[in-house]
Length: 156
Image 1 (tube, one colour):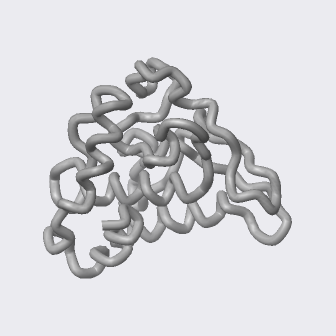
Image 2 (tube, one colour):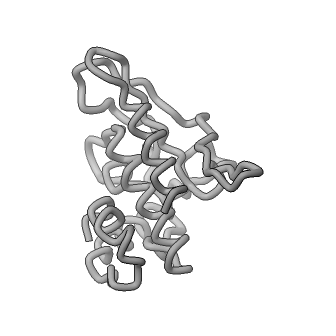
Image 3 (spheres, one colour):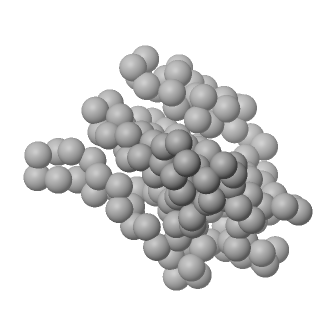
């Protein structure tokens, strides 16, 4: 749980404070989480990050503009199995710090249950279908210490 709290603190720092420019990481996945020699978790991999002007909720996302997008490092898109629904919906796709909270929830679900919260995300259609099944996840599989936080991040 200490590692999860460390990542949540990192995401909070990206949100900035009063009047500061915010950043949305948009690449939170197991590959962007680094473990130190002391076992601390650190957030890295800021290659997909976007700046959000102060006072705005988010910005238009440049990601997943192509309906056939598959996501992932080689395509220059976030990994679909950790991507929030806001980034893949039809119409206006919004990139915001809240997207990172969802992604962190996906990572923590996997860490604590051994399975992915979003399964079958081979393309945008699969991702949208997986997001529609999120309410079927059973939060009782999670340790009580993180259950509420992970459930809220995934809106389960």
